[in-house]
Length: 255
Image (cartoon, rainbow, N blue to C red):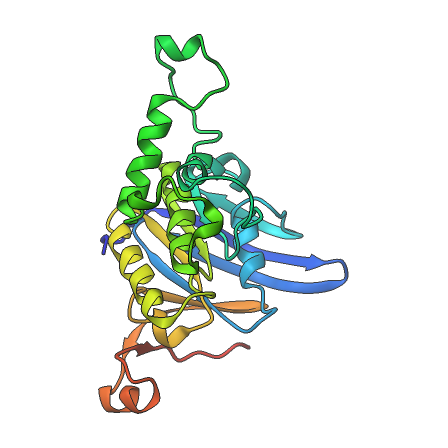
């Protein structure tokens, strides 16, 4: 895992947000440091996905301040990779895996070659190289020519991860990336994320604190308010009785 630094890459100061008259987040403050692997957990409707949307610049806070890589979330968006829980397109849409990965290159600033200046509107050679490198990194290069609708849930999550990586982000944000796959594949995805954490700051939302606590170095517990903790080791016998695997726990309370 990347050694965490002293530079905050995500800063939230006293952030509140409401949908209409319904408060969702209240006075949330958070620092995510460069190299962090942060897990975000909490009950359904507790505000986890809203927190991500605020960091991504998809929502504006009612009050408070958010900075991502020293900028407003919208200005930093191209340096942040996002993996949603569900793809933003129909599974039967006629698009190949490589074309999905190439979508991650949209909006990436690059200098076109001489030949590419005469063919505007197309993906560049650099785009294709980045998309193929991302597919290799997530071990999905062999799927490049497959139609997206033919993939299993685990394969699709790898491709969505490749799409995010193709944009060469500095921060990777994932919203319950393993919600629709089985436990064995869940471990595969998080093993991959642990490798990626060697060079990327990662924020991942999950419903399973017991599982993710063996991967992340901090846990943010969100239920309208936010409490952030380091993970702590607990007795292996108690863990085995509860979960059957080694995990770490956090103790917390919301005021």
